Image 1 (tube, helix red, strand yellow):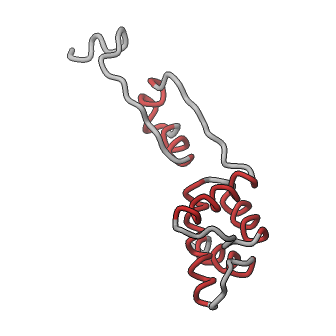
Image 2 (cartoon, rainbow, N blue to C red):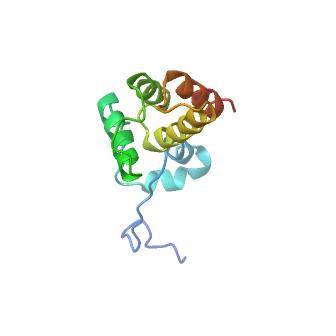
Length: 123
């Protein structure tokens, strides 16, 4: 009885944001009632290769480095593996930086990026 007017007007609005896995999970049968009440959906695609490179360069610049720290091959591999999703780009870039540091390299090259990909995707 307390739910008698729930479908006739909306007393509450909510914005739900999340990764692509959230979209798949909401579409499961257990969340059918929630899925039916979502009025608007929007999906943001991952960044393009040039955007990923600029994104990494921007964050490296924020850290105080003005000269290139990632080789073009490393950026391309990070972009390909992450599909341009910012959180995945961040995780791979940090792992690649650690791998390059462990090997005493002054720049993150493709082999450092490959080590990062192996580390991040091994699970």
